[in-house]
Length: 176
Figure 1 (spheres, helix red, strand yellow):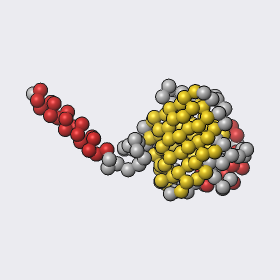
Figure 2 (tube, rainbow, N blue to C red; figure 1 turned 30 degrees about the vertical axis):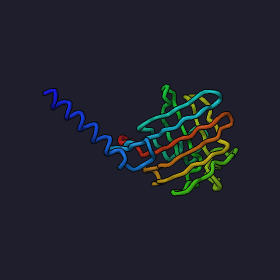
Figure 3 (cartoon, rainbow, N blue to C red; figure 1 turned 60 degrees about the vertical axis):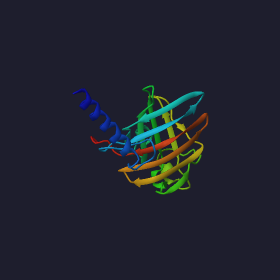
Figure 4 (cartoon, rainbow, N blue to C red; figure 1 turned 120 degrees about the vertical axis):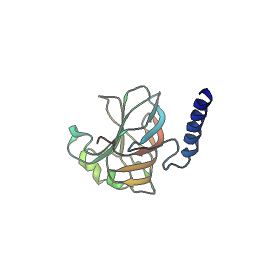
């Protein structure tokens, strides 16, 4: 009995290890059954942040309703300490698959950001009720862009007081 149990456990472990390299998507993120992943880290205002979430919320629409109607691409999650974490691309129509898009400095607000076409306008929110921080540089590389259904790639965000970098493969949650 004990030998059979150990054999079964070994088979499960080996099967899991062997299948890992065959899954699509950025390294370290394994979407399954409508799930996805967001993995990033960095330092902002002297504080270290890390996000490792297998099922972040994907929203394409107005993610900042208090600022007037517009279209945003948003990834909402929690950092490893449990605090709210959000990435908001204020002008998702500027994104292109298979391309590195620069993150641009912009003072645009609301729907005016939708008109920025020379790069991505990206805000980061670190905590509930905290103001959003506008990225001043960096890049967003999209390997996959299926509008409203799937976004995968890498990002590097330069913020006024820090930097964040990581990978993502985000799809709507099954209940959405």
